[in-house]
Length: 294
Image 1 (tube, rainbow, N blue to C red):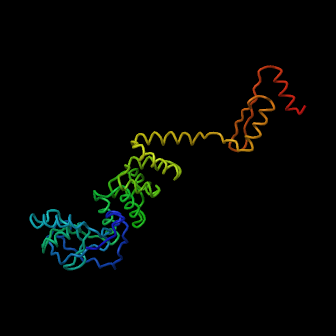
Image 2 (cartoon, rainbow, N blue to C red):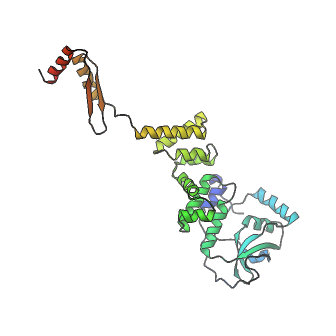
Image 3 (cartoon, rainbow, N blue to C red):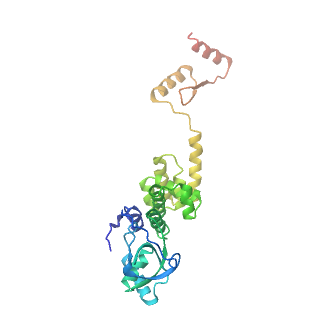
């Protein structure tokens, strides 16, 4: 069994492994009675799938499966494609195939179909995405690989995965999150719902700040969604820009001269208004004379 660095996790390393480039075999005529049917095929006639992204198989789980197969046989057939006479290549079921070999089986049930290299690549990635132990980031990476390496649109991908277009889009958006948020999702410190809410924030700074709030305050998904909506409303209606130090100093001197508080509202592009309040006609006349330079 090939050793892999555990840092990426089994699922992620499988999805990131480069696809092996094998020369195309000539597709030999598959006997009619083999197409779409399950056949007992010699293990020695089956080669591993060079397009299989998954390279690491947990040893204990594989041994457990091998023991079960030795006792009960291989109940679920693997899927293979015909390469030549007595020559097949795995499409899916490599874990079962390895366990059957370890159990000492010489023949295994296999569903035979015809597939070209492009189909093999798609099937191998799809099979990995459908594994239950994958976290949302690993699923998102699988979706991205199918789009980029198999030239699929999001609509085509959704159809192949029997998912909605929005489901595919939501997973792909997770890859836009900063690494710290992706790691928290992979480690299950936050949920998919948390991550979907966080990705709606506009800046990395806001996203990281929200992650810290979730972890420190144990916020629910609903709490985060509420905070994101509130922040979105604030961003749409930003507070007027504050005065800088020199402007505040001048405003303070002006207030002392007129012996009244002066209100200033400054806009984004430097425009705004100054408001002077007066209590009587005498104060009003004083302000007018000051403005007139008298």
